[in-house]
Amino acid sequence: MDFSKPIIDIIKQRSSWRTYTNQLLEDDTKKKINQILTFKDIKSPFSELAGKSRFELIGVPEFAPDERKKLGTYGLIKGAQEFIVGAIEKSDYYKEDYGYILEVIILAATDLNLGTCWLGGTFNKNLFSTKIHCQKNEIVPAITPIGYTTETRRRKEKVIRAFIKADSRFPWSKIFFENTFSTALLRETTGRYEILLEMVRLAPSAGNKQPWRVLKEIDCDNYHFYVKTSQDLKLKVYNTFVNLDIGIAICHFDLTAKEVGMKGMWKFLKPDTNTPKELKYIITWIGR
Ligand SMILES: Cc1cc2nc3c(=O)[nH]c(=O)nc-3n(C[C@H](O)[C@H](O)[C@H](O)COP(=O)(O)O)c2cc1C
Image 1 (cartoon, rainbow, N blue to C red):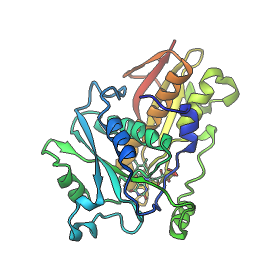
Image 2 (cartoon, rainbow, N blue to C red; image 1 turned 120 degrees about the horizontal axis):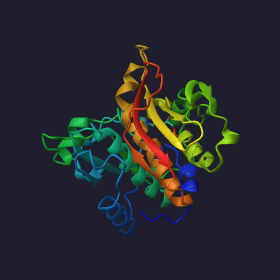
Image 3 (cartoon, rainbow, N blue to C red; image 1 turned 30 degrees about the horizontal axis):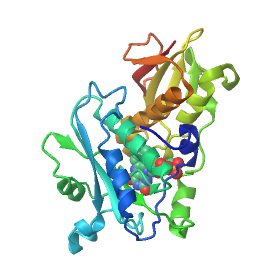
Image 4 (tube, rainbow, N blue to C red; image 1 turned 180 degrees about the vertical axis):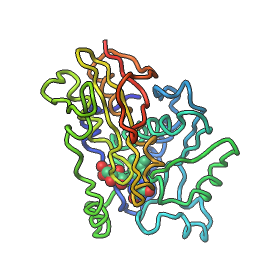
């Protein structure tokens, strides 16, 4: 995927947008989006193990008038006239793969100055699944509105963002570790990896829960990626999204590594570490 700006700038530019202008996309913009959606070489480190995915641009006018009232965005999304909807075959790593690929699409839309917002929960799954003729072996894990944004966010959106502290992220010491999960990885010791990890930190996540944890091996550039789930009844709802979230975070790391010319490979290992029980291992970056 070619972006017009550095990926680091696009990652910093992206933020969820829930207030749109009611306009349909212009034909040439629609054409660009459709080209992005059919781009065959968006591959994630999970693609070999996951099933096939496909994405479509669906306009609100394509829904019957009674269906338009049931899109299920519960008043959270206002004025959006188009959505990107994807389906992926149920398989190992389907959420990680979908997370990675839809984030590439969202970053490409951001590059075109369009607004987007990951929606994993607040959409009518049945309606959107029917609309893209979802097969029995397929699933629609998340969608995004896509369109022209209003100049400022409406009040309700500002309240939502303040509630989930959407503009802030955990400090490095809470999510990046060295050798053991009780030793924080010091930012100033990470050298060329600093920018890659910072791009992970800035990634969006469901409810802004930021479930990714990264453990660096001492004296080498092996970075093990984990997800943290919660036992708290109120937060358990977010556990279903952690595999999408890690796919997004790995997308940021991977695209940034490619852009800055860092060499390495992704491997599924069994790291020999004392892992807290709320953490689940996902994948490792082996830097060269
Ligand atoms: C996998 C995933 C699912 C999400 N689901 C929803 C959702 O159902 N409804 C919603 O309003 N926002 C949803 N979000 C958006 C997050 O709330 C948002 O990314 C987070 O608060 C950080 O804000 P930012 O995207 O502006 O950086 C989701 C984000 C992710 C990554």
